[in-house]
Amino acid sequence: MTIVVTGAAGFIGSNIVKALNARGETDIIAVDNLTRGDKFVNLVDCEISDYLDKQDFISLIGSGDFDGEIRAILHQGACSDTMNHDGKYMMENNYQYTLELFEFCQAEEIPFLYASSAATYGKGSVFKEERQHEGPLNVYGYSKFLFDQVLRRRMKEGLTAQVAGFRYFNVYGPQEQHKGRMASVAFHNFNQYRESGKVKLFGSYDGYADGTQSRDFVSVEDVVNVNLYFLDNPDRSGIFNLGSGRAQPFNDVAVATVNACRRHEGLPALTLAELVQQGILEYIDFPDALKGKYQSFTQADIGKLRAAGYSGPMLTVEQGVDRYVDWLIARQG
Image (cartoon, rainbow, N blue to C red; front, side):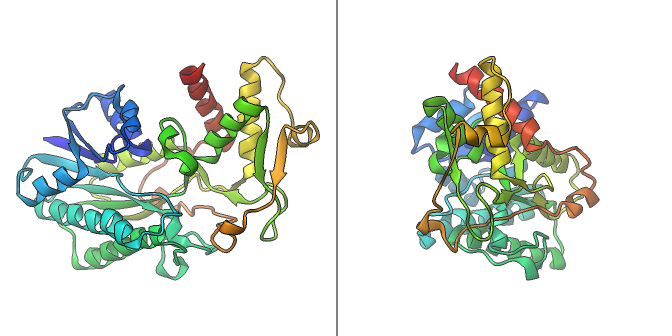
């Protein structure tokens, strides 16, 4: 029986495939859209049994080719560009595709683990998996929110097999290089520092001082661990926040990134004040295009995740970024 990972050549998907390989799992069908061919590099280190284009896969599902053949689907594939306003594409790609996979898994009585998003909360200040706290600000967030609503209804009616949705907060880590401007702050900070010796962050906005807008930054290592925990515990269903459970300012990411790079250069660590004083950290005006569409603060309430039995520690920005920079430097030299 095979495991299917969609978005397998992407950031989180490829990390999941690699983790499955580490467990000895190689009967894995990787599903993705390689129109952007450079993503293939994320699968080079992975062992898979087959690769299918996402449209071919959904067609084969519909024609019954995979009936009785699949053990579980880990659905990570989606358009995650929050600035993509093509609603027709977003709803087909994120909502309708997810719905079809969900119906297949329910008919086959197999686990379905899927990527939701913290974008479902919009400008809210309470990040708890409850309807009253949700209000997406863009069509990407809405596409994720709408399927979460379907799951809630179906859970009341009764599921035939496990379904777990994970509201990813700000995920960072290896294998995100193809994401361009949607890659993590840590990735952009690293490249800025290596190219110019400086890091730039947004200045004051929305009542927050320079660089103090805060997010729940979660390492892809922790995201993978949670997915595998639920795969191992098919009796647990629901919608779960997947963050570190703590908010840290963008300043923390910049300091951690620069100091990890300085460690590789044989230089001592610097404080935030020293980085600003030496001109290594600069603040730029907050862009007009993001005003009113920007989450200045996020912090996952992970109480529901803990109640489901996941007890693993979540890496801090300092721990996770340090490991990530080591990986980036090992790859880039």
